[in-house]
Image 1 (cartoon, helix red, strand yellow):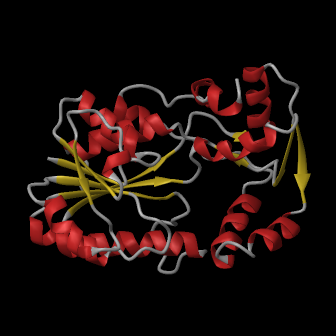
Image 2: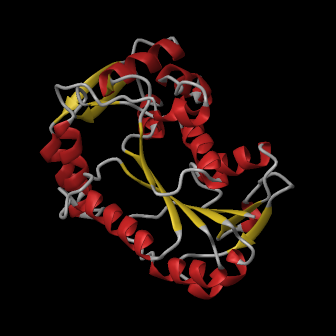
Length: 279
């Protein structure tokens, strides 16, 4: 049995679908099973990582589990329950901000994810880490702006990233859960380096609209957002974007090596999400 934690959120739902397509037995952990709307083959169970008492039943009979953690969440209860249940393998969706080999990471995002990685390593359970820096779904933040016009306003519009389609992530998750990748940490990238402005251009072509971008003052945006979100987390996020200005993003073929096909381009992601942008 393969367990997907957070199975109704981004990455989790697609991972469930990929495992079902592969004919693998799948259990989905969610806080709201009644709203899961997952394939009928899936064993949907109620569970919550912040309520350790819900975990033993969900982990019973599980060979491998896919884990996505909300920033700051304590992984210790899950690791304890997984060890007691005899889970053999964990696949953790980590951050591409992690610097391999660094004792102290450069920011709180990287440090949190590396600390989780270390805890998993120390658990004695086989592991695979999938380090993802820029999922293409980040572009969904543009959708609300496009309801009111053809201008996208954002800080660091010249920051370049190699955006990754969530379906590619799901395919990698399914293959690494099934096995053969123990002890490996993979950096997942898309097939091309694109600035946020270039991404907006691709969205405009897909929608048939003359979209433009307006670069906002990062400090003003950071100050405003910090009223509602963790300031340290935001500072780290803005720092990563600042570092990505003026240089191409790293691109590799890890997704192709694992899945057998090239990573999906951003234009494919835009087409797949046309409805989200009113197209």
